[in-house]
Image (cartoon, rainbow, N blue to C red; front, top):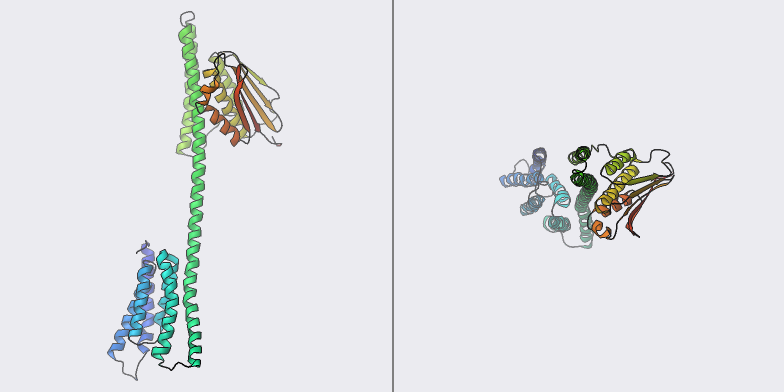
Length: 389
């Protein structure tokens, strides 16, 4: 029934309505005057009409339904007193506009019906009641012309309001689409951060567990191994903590991306695996001639990190081969580890590691394949770089 308006809008509407009523009142007082004497009933009718139409103008945006009802009430009062159309009738145009622009769906179509019905009622009132003329061909022709003119004027106001309504809806849809796109981007960012968190935590915990198990078994024969293992565990945990803090900062402040791993950090990653007791053999041929795009470097780092973590957790303990080939238009990465008699693929596919690696490759425009190849589990990724790289 009522729309939300700001205090400024309410104040403006009330002031405009008051000025309109004051401007229409003198014209209403002149209508129907007989000489210099003005019957009291005409004065009352003039004040009543200006008040009703002024109220309709005042609430036209606050409640289009109420304004439409007041406009009809004013028209009925005007016809009841037998008064001619005057300046106060301009309020009808404002009411029809707001009914089409801001009213509910029902009020929208009631306003359309009021424009058509009001044209017929006004024409009939002018020619049948006020004119009291006989129905001749000339009268019917003139009445038809008046009907068309009144209907055109009323429907024009309603149509302008309908166009305004359409513009507001288009703007609302556009804003909703922008919000949906922003939400989609935010969701993609959260998914990326979740993948990064998974990679960091899974890799770090795998190294920590391997070091702890190795130190526990080697403690009896080599007491110094405990100190080395604890040093590796401490360094790995500190690095993981720093990465997690960066990721959490991104969750709190998405505009601050923070530093991301690059190919320059691969040596530190390989060092962690070797410190954990992995026989890691790395081949880089050819080496990158220039710095690849940041997105490519991040994708390669995270894919290798996850693949090496899986090799550490699920491998048979044999050597792990890593190969990188930085071509002019693409980079090819492969990680191969022995799986022994029990394939590691089923255990890996139960988690999110392979899914995350494949998603990273696809987001970078590349492909990734992972599966058992003889007695080894192999992860192969290919990511485009572009001629400019």
